[in-house]
Structures are given as structure tokens and as C-alpha cells.
Length: 110
Length: 114
Figure (cartoon, rainbow over the protein chains, first blue to last red):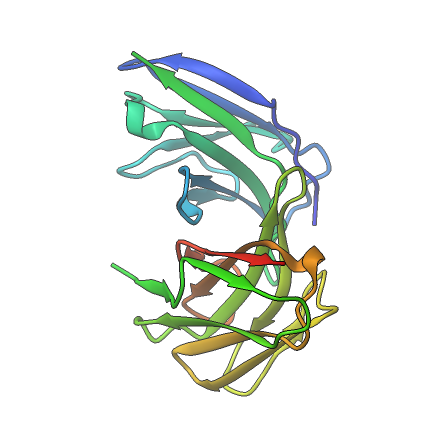
């Protein structure tokens, strides 16, 4: 599975949009981009996934570049409860396991 | 909502003890997983199971075994606990046989081996 690269951390003001970048330059055609987050003292939580089209759900939006080498997770109105580690993962269509990297620490500040 | 329940939140065991970590999911999911999480190393897959009585090794299976006698329950066994197995253990499940189904995680068991 392709590797992903994320910044170590970022800050965001409460109420503003949080844009979390992810690079996956070696992604192949049958690999999907997944995002999970992990709030302190909890297990990871699924957020969203996509192949090449942009996706939106009640939690977030996922923007994937046309060449699919990078993506951005957007939390439209960040709250303090969105403070967490966010993991960007690339998954083969018929792959048999997920590999979680270090993720990006998002701190939402009032 | 899918619920993945891990039997203990915190566990302290002695070196050499046999340790059982239990995980139950309530949504009839096919796949179940055991990960461990350590600072600086992220989440690492120990074992997974895609059906009752089936199991597959993950990236770090050494020192661990698993059991899946019923669809809803996946147990992780440390045959002889060692201090390097002190970690946060996370169980997860997903709906069907393809990894594209999102994983649902429990809240973890923090195991300390002394």
C-alpha cells in the first residue's frame, strides 16, 4: 500500500475551517484514501474515504487532487471537541490490512 | 451505532502470566482486528480474522495468539506476558470481507506488564 505523509501538527481557531493536508504521491489506481481520527483516551473513529471524487458527509469533506497525489480533509467549523490525532491512510481495494502512520495532531483553540 | 466493547480498560499483569483480552462487537461484522498502539510507533496490526475460526497474522504477531469461536467475539492471548508487551491494545471490526468497510474501534485496553 502507498505511504502517506502528514505534517506533525497544526492549530485551528474554534469556528474556523480546519484543512488537514496529506501527501500520497505513490498512490495507485485501485487505492482509496481514508481518514480516521483519535480523540484522547478513545479508539480511532472513521471519518470519510474517497477514490478520486470529492466526498462530503456530516463530519467532513475530502478533497482529492486530480492527480490523486494529495488530499485535504476539511472540518468546516472546527470545535474544541475536534482536537485529536487525524490519520490519513491509503488502502488497496482488496487489501488485507490498514497501516496507521503517526497522523497529524490538530489542536482547536478558543 | 456499532459498538465494539473491550472487556477491560486497564489491566496490570505480571511477567510470565497468561493474559486474555476480550473484544465483542454487536453488529454482526465479518472482520475483526487487534492492534497495539505505542508512542512514536503508531498503530500496528497484530492479528485479524475475517470469519469464525479464521485468523491471519498482521505485522507483529510474535508473542500473541487469537481466538474467534463466535462471530461477535475476538480474543487476544498473550501466552507468557513480557514487559515489552506493555501497551494500549485496540480491537476493531468491519462489516464485510473487503477492507473498504470502515473500521469501528473499541476504546482500548491499557495493559501494563510488571
